[in-house]
Length: 72
Image (cartoon, rainbow, N blue to C red; front, side):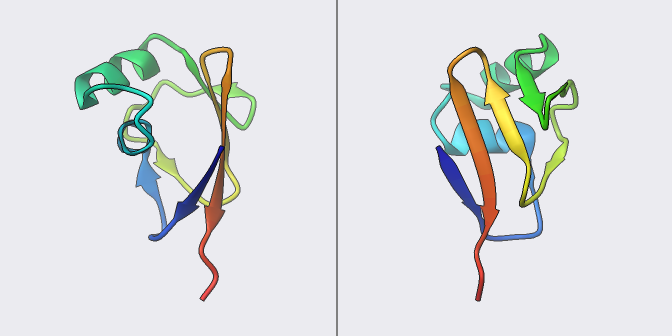
């Protein structure tokens, strides 16, 4: 899936919530804290990590998110 970034960044737990991959912010934070999110091939444990254009996230075993910037 692709996500178009409207600002400079979005915090990781907010991105998971915006994409409806979780039911709540608390669930998003738990998924991140338990190591289920890879960012550019590395485990990302920071719930508020600043996700920027060009990042590729893998959530669990089956969801890949490409973060794109909106070109004006």
